[in-house]
Each structure stands twice: as C-alpha cells, then as structure tokens.
Image (tube, rainbow, N blue to C red; front, top):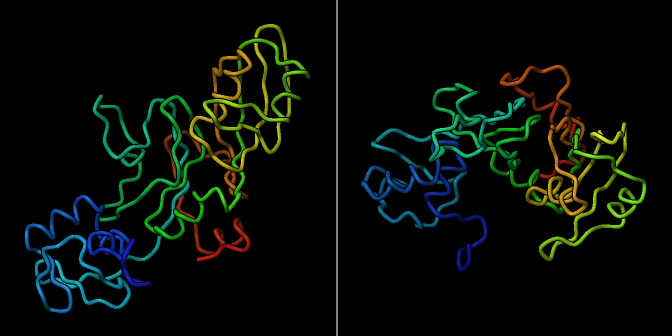
Length: 245
C-alpha cells in the first residue's frame, strides 16, 4: 500500500491474509472495536501491521495463522465464482463446506463455463497463480457453432484485437470440425476476461461449451462436476515448479 513501510499491510488485510475472515468482515470487526494489536485496541482498518509478527486478538482471543489449504474443484455450469449472487444462483464456495475456512477463488470461470477451479486460503499463492507475469497455462476444451477453418486458426495464432486488447492463444488445436460445430483445444497463459469467448466471437463463432481441463500441470481428470479434492503442498510444488512465495 502506498506510503506503508515494506512488510506492513493494513490491519483489515492482515486478518484476511491470516485466513481469519474476508476483508469486509475484518473491517467491520475492527470498526466495532473487537480487534486488538499488541494489546492495544485498534479501530482503524488501515492501521499498519506485519501479520507474521503482530499479536492480534479478536474479542480477547488470539488470532493464529490458519494452515494453508488449497482445493481443486470441478465447477459445474450454472454456478458463479463470486461469494454471493444477487440473482440467488449457487456459488462455488457453497460446494466446499469447510467451516471456518476463508477461501478465495484463483481467477474466475463465468456462469456458463465448467471445469477446473482452484480455491485457497493462501493469498500469496493466489496472487502468484493469478499474475499474468507468472505465465501459467490454462487449457480449455471448446465447442463452437459452425466450421472453424484453417484460415481462422491462423488469424487466432497471429492474434486478434478486441476492445483494445490483443487476444492470442498460446496454442490452439482443431480436433474435429463440421458444418454444424467444431471442437478445439485452446491453451492460454494470460487469462484475460472471457478471452476464449471473445476470440471466437471475433470470428463469428458462438461458444456453446467451454470447460477448463488443466491449470499448469494440474489436471481435472475424472473428477465429477461439483466434486473437489484437497491438494497437498508436494502436489502444488510438483505442478508449479519454480513456485515463488
């Protein structure tokens, strides 16, 4: 945060980084006078602290750093990635019933997209995985209306401009094509918003099915929609060699 010494973060963010609660909930606790730092009551959500060093208490109970946990979820179609939804649609967070565990989604999959989604309480891991500079690949199986031609594939490989952004897959493979529909495998590394749908829309092909099947070396495999499994630290290290934390 601007003007804050290295290593320090706002108190509301520190509680979130420690896996205690979301920043919104943490801010309210602070404003309600429930939080002490090193024995002193602090009612400023932006009060600077070093999360690993400060003694933080909520209603006189010490806050301990929650162990890092990461889950691989097969997100079904029709489920949103936000924490709550104004339309009352189910969210991915309702699919992992882990009491007291504040998870965040690594990136998003839109309502109509299914497949591999990572959820974790490790904010540093989530930031690193989501950073375009980390260049971690995401692989999708895509079905579109109409026949995708070799000319269209070459246009995609060269890159397309859409809303001022250049969209270009790291790799694209046409698996099957007919006059009715085409099936492709697309690999991305930047993760721009709705990138796959925008690429094919620019070529006048509507995406009818989109499923993410890999994130880095992690694969969806045979995991059923709505099911999840916890990832070990060893598995994460193997999947993301050179992980910087």
